[in-house]
Length: 282
Image (cartoon, rainbow, N blue to C red; front, side, top):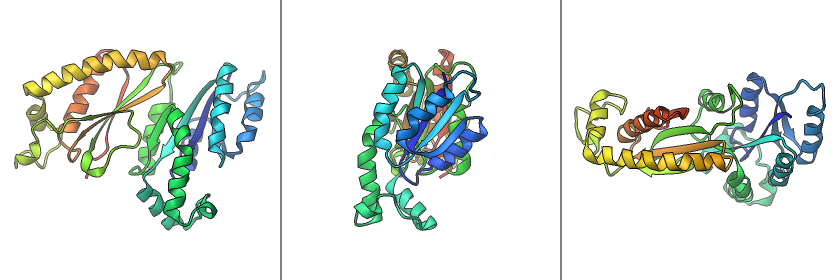
């Protein structure tokens, strides 16, 4: 049986870029595949003698038709995952303005923003069913590649839940790809200490300021316990990826320190954790 990845998402969110990265990783990639041909392609690569073991299919326009296909393929015993690429409306408008391309739903909406909103609404069931959602709004090609490498350049059977813990700043908006969001703005803010303001949560002085307090220790103990109870349940349900987002005001101090500490604790329990800091350089 082939390892099958279906790449879907909003137009302009980076599906073709993701396909190029996966091709470099050794996946056999077919871009802009009509949904009606998914079964035929999978049947061909699954025949005895096929040398294609990892197949990535970039969906064409009829994304919504993927859901019954995914269910049928899984019922047939195939390992099938679905990647959904998302982006904010503002980011997508900027990309369309830069490329001067027409949106696929341009004829069904009075303007670009309305076309994006319509596609977002139509694809919500696909996003809800996706195994992994990546928000590309603030990602350059190198950052997108790093996320895809972490998710799909696999060693072993790849059946273990892949966990990402990422910091962010609420003033820059909620991350679109988070499964769990935790707000740590209740902790004292190093920003108001002039000596700590230029530093980040990676610096020992900020880390100590944030973590060496009873309220931070109590919070982390409780959150660690919650995660340890949830992660086996997510694994039992067959979830392949889980993103936990930890937010403070600006995403440079408290959330960074807490993210690093939470990741350390989860690693101590045997979980492979990828760490990211969305707004650290802002």
